[in-house]
Amino acid sequence: MPDRIEEILKEIHVMFAKCEAYGNSPDLVIISKSELFELLEKLNEGIDDVLDQYEATTRSRERARIEQDKQAAETVARAKLEADDVHAAASLYTDTMLEDLKQILEATKSRVKDDMLDLLANIELQEEVLDRNKESVKEGLAELHDSEMYLNALTQLRKKAEEKRKFGEQAELLARQEENIFEEQDKEKQAQKLEIRIDKPGENTGVTYSTRFNRNKKKKKKTGKGSSDAVHDGTDGEPEGLKADSDHIPGTEYSADDFDLDREYEEWKAAEESDGTEHKPEKKGFGKMLESLFGKGDE
Image 1 (cartoon, rainbow, N blue to C red):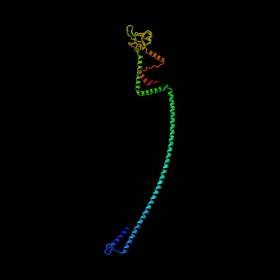
Image 2: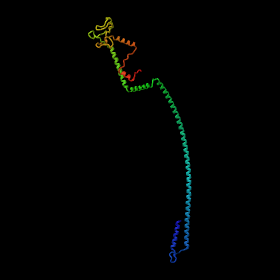
Image 3: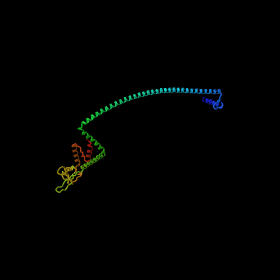
Image 4: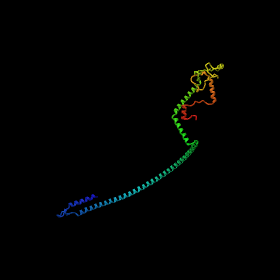
């Protein structure tokens, strides 16, 4: 429509340009009134059309704005409704979850309470056991004269245990050496039984005589005296110098053939049995050391 108005205005301009001048005046022209009114009518119609179009556009825009506002309001209302629904659902879900969590906490609290009661009961039971043990220990300690004796006993036990652990191998070695010493002593005593030394000084000259005794008792009874080399005091053919080992004087040596060893052994055995005591060698050296370290084994 604006193009139509522009075209009409061009026609009016062309028409004035072609009109004949009036007289000698350049500003006055002769123009056809009907043609001018026709063009003006067309121009008026064009302007009316433009105005109508503008009004229609304005109304359409207004309607669009109104429709847009309406749609916006509807969208906002719908969004608000949906948001309210989401909020309500979230609140309901949160309430449900909190209720479930509360139930879980209540159940946990109940279980913990039961476990705590069981634990307290167990602790009380252990306390009772400890009290009974304490009473037993007190009764045991009452048998001791004082606490110092108890502490000393504990100290000695710990010390002995440490010494046994530390010197166990030495103790075994010392025990074996002691046994070997006892065996050697027994062997020496057996050898002393088989060989007896009797030293007898000579008369006025200091000469030592070697006296031999006959082992045959029947021969002694026949002759009534010992062999030609025997020196005796008139008793059963025994020499006058036969005494304990502590009284003998070195110088004269006798062998087993010079004595009746069977008779002497029987007499010694009978004397031991009549005493009723077992011959035990005196513990010396390693034995005393072991007793000082670990105490007597029989005690």
